[in-house]
Length: 171
Image 1: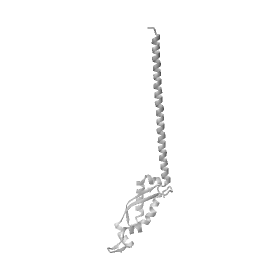
Image 2: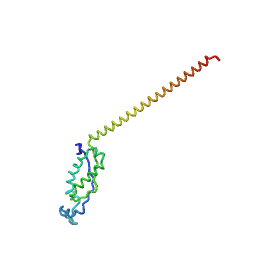
Image 3: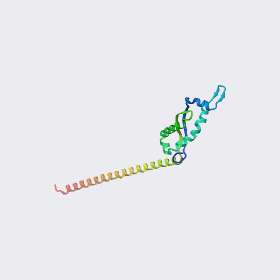
Image 4: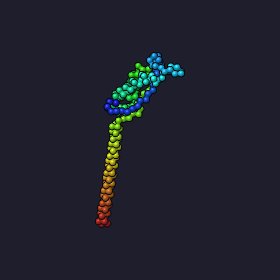
């Protein structure tokens, strides 16, 4: 649950490897299975014993340090921070963390709905702006047409005045 106290659904992808320097630790602390090939300790057994319990509490606690907006928009920063913290928190385990990242993040419906409303509002604002621009263009065009019409009427009046003057003037 991020800082916003909203429920965030997410998955984690990670790549881990067993630290060769800690093989003796594993052999001394993890029970092995006897198979036909001999004694076997699987990486899954080591993971289930040392990493899984910590990851189930560490990752949610790390995410509480971010807002939903940060998780949604700054994924690389969030993933880098998660990796840094997990490396620190898992240092007592026999694992080396190679990659970690959030995946399939599903934002709470309230956030998704708010984003959709914001997008709709932006579209409506753009539509209103376009309509205003069109209306102003129509007004400007009508003004230019009216100005041209007046100029034509004035020219006609001058021509009529000139014709009348010539007709009235004796030759």
